[in-house]
Image (cartoon, rainbow, N blue to C red; front, side):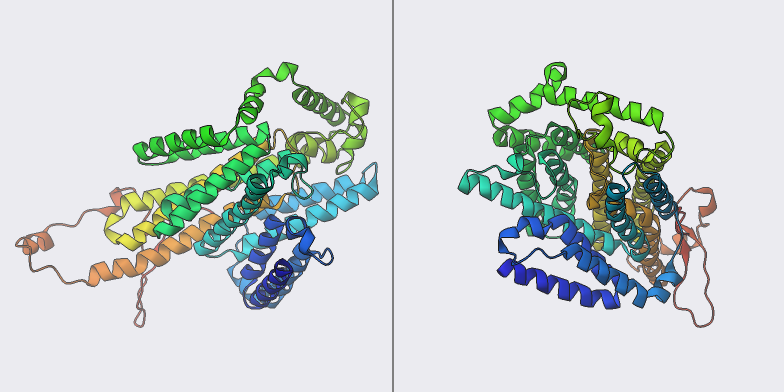
Length: 488
């Protein structure tokens, strides 16, 4: 009953906050979507309530009440355009579906996910929004992993392997949990307090063990790819080597012989029934795409026909995100989906590059507290990159089209350039003014010589700072422009 009361309080607080700022409604929606309380605490619910739909309704009400402010700040970018195009491609596929009833059900599920991602793009205005959402991901997935570990250690049950989580099987549940690993890393190395770092590292280990207990080779491989990406981009190198060593020790201790054997069997795919069934479903998907290249057979209609095209049994799901979309909704829909993923990666790479350039080229405008915030900003962007790469790699072996976390990261990636620009501008202006207004230090005997020294031509030095003073008689600040791309 206490879980039910907690959910009611969360909905009340989040819905009330959404009336003033739709971000808090989004925070509530994605918290409930990731946590899935109707599955996690089904034993404590008097009846199954549509928690995430209630939160989605609160978000829409909040957007309508704050529409003028959102419209004033709105900047159209590539990601929302691709979301609209993908939605239109899905709608066309539903109209021409072989089984319209099934396709309409999945179109509604898609519509909820796409609409909330579209709203998220326009509601995120500050980097602290991204920081809070990132913390929510690692806390919620860490709590699910805690429940998985608790059931194993105290009750001897591995429910996530036998039953999955919610409507996800063990493979989908493993990939869902694995997406929290990069965020655990980000806060473990960049949190401002030692206890926050310790908790984040602990959550990372708990999530890692839960992923191993799913026995999902796809989730394990995807986790390995994401962790290698993170360690390759971590600086300094000796810290990356130390983290890698600790991970190797942790996996050695956490993975039993059955888990190790399961992972090593990946190399024996030619004799593995699961791998062969996937390949047969991929072949069936390609045949469906050849016959229905433009609109597919309808959203999730392809499962009905895979057996006719060579799959091992009737109703076989196409275990590939990309082939599933191509067979269901056609090649154009699949191309738009891949374009969204690649665009999101590109925007995050460019945003991280700009943050790093700011740290390297403007050290005189920083202070220790600002440096720590920029370092955390860099690590959170890296975590978003790694988590999306993890999903993209795992999506080659699984079909999880309406799983909310990757759509949230795609929306975050779209809003990231303008949020970075906003935060860096607000960070630079007061520091620049303070630096210019500060009196010369009397302790230096060469002050007069330094003041009379000709100024350096800043235009010849490539920098992310292009300072353009715009002072009027009553102004107290100066404006800066940052070439951060989207959202200018």
